[in-house]
Image (cartoon, rainbow, N blue to C red; front, side, top):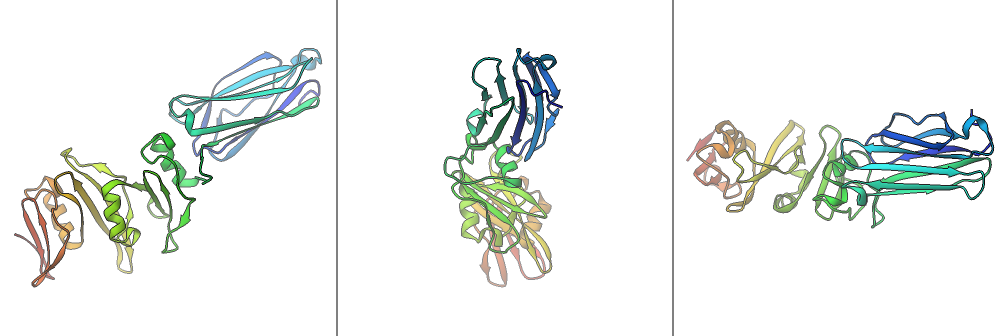
Length: 295
């Protein structure tokens, strides 16, 4: 129960998509009638109270709480001052590598019990909201300071009516309820767009460096009446970006992907007399309708 004399009701909203954990708190005057929660989960509001020492009207209330954002080095500090003489004040600050990725506001109330409101959310200079699983992926990649940079649209439904997606300056994030959210960008992203995006398959990985350190790839999964079907797009500076799928991909995977003597794909799969053919650095794979042969 807050004392009426120079007390503060603190309302702190975390819209970051990550948990905030209390690092420290201070009181130059007064103390907590009800302390802040040790953790503030994503998309929740924490309400606590700060009051003057012993309920004394003369001391006022002056305090702060500092949080850490997830496992990052980003800290969030909120402060308040309800003095015996003078105006009620609040202050708020974000520090650390991702400080420019967030907008922290504070509104100072008035009266014997001043209602202080703080709101922490990702920066979005283009008016596009980012939330949920796509926000978590954006956060894991560094928010606007990372590869994806800023959103260029609001989250929207995929044409199949199942997934969700959002485009950013540096790439795309697609989400499917059975997969989660993953990012596609660069030349792999360009090829994925050319071959139908989610019709080829939803990403099940972010773009990743291949084990040999030479190329990059994304794996994808399409949902068909016969069940899920996996596919990939592989890229190197020498070969460009090429998709691999179906029986040819299955055979290439059995052989060890790019670590096999075939190396990386140098063409897309194409019609060939009697079946389908795809060329690689070290040879070709041919599907004749029954099995895949190495050529």
